[in-house]
Image (cartoon, rainbow, N blue to C red; front, side, top):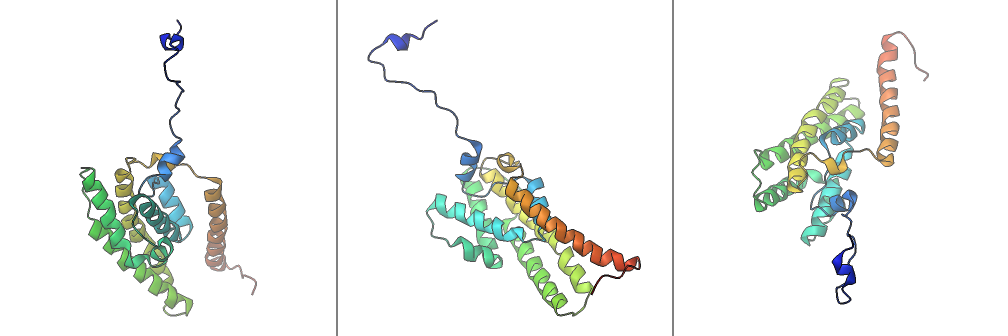
Amino acid sequence: MQDASSDNLYAPPTADVAPAPRATATAAQPFYVVSATKFCVLFFVTFGLYVLYWFYVHWRRWGRTSNETVWPVPRAVFSIFFAHALARRIDQRLRALGIVRAWSPALAATVYVVFQIGSTVASRLADRGIGVPITDIVSLLALVPIALSMLAMQRAANAACGDPDGAGNRRFTWANWVWIVIFGLIWLLIGAAILLPAFGVDLPQ
């Protein structure tokens, strides 16, 4: 049956409007959206360096959508000074939307700051040969509470963007796989350096 509106010469032209791509919708959100699985993989495989990108994208999107003047790069590099500010903005967004969430933004940010400082200090000591291998171990173990605190903020950010599970950014892109392969090789080299001597295999000097 033919649409009656097509016979009406005075009817305005119509067009099929396709829904916006998910990637576009995700990029327009006030915060960075990512699934818990993807977050954990990228965080641990990069030895925690993912935090630089993570904070940068959060602040960049917040600045674009809120019209607040922010400098994403410094806030990412010096994240320990801006973690509480980001957590507060995520919580304020949740409250503005009427979303009730059982979490403590101050606690999540504080845990991040404390263990990030601890990990950095331990890493610097290890680089100077002080307290090795204890300082190396402490530096790596600190990644666990850092990841948990960031994941708490990330899940809250996902909820504030209407995507609690981070479904809009759960798939790994080709760029993600490049970093996974690069850092995966580094993990293998570190593992070889630790395990081979234990089996009596001398590494080349």
